[in-house]
Image 1 (cartoon, rainbow, N blue to C red):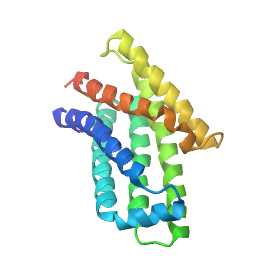
Image 2 (image 1 turned 135 degrees about the horizontal axis):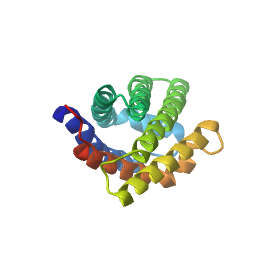
Image 3 (image 1 turned 60 degrees about the vertical axis):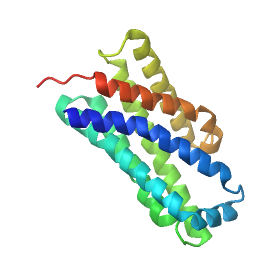
Image 4 (image 1 turned 60 degrees about the horizontal axis):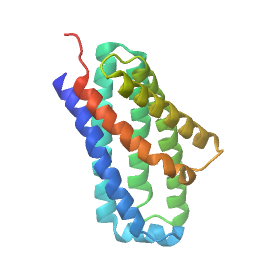
Length: 195
């Protein structure tokens, strides 16, 4: 159990660092889509390594969630696990679909990866909403804060998924996901499972 808690918590903390690095990397990339893919390929060693580390950290979170789902038999952890497994599909699409491919293939890979990413987050945040709504480990104010963020992010990703807004338009609320990962890390350290 200690290992699962570490996978969940360390993965949740480190994913924030990796997201910060990606934001920095993206700020240096050209805005024009064709130039952006060319830039990505010219700097593939950095981007490829970055996505592999992110893939590893998201897998770490998934392992922790799966362990908690199997151990507790709670629907919330099952939903979180399914969301994480859907999110993991994003990485092979990016790693295989962007490198040295024609623009049309790269754009198709990007669209597929974005759809998978958005849908996986709908499920992931929905699971977190249910998890924190029924939580007994966090202080009341943190519990309310956690399920409020998780519920709000579920709605945001659902609105993106249905096509009412784009992922680019929703980036303004992305820092809430970072806060959620930090709460998840803390929660992972607080959770107690019966032996």
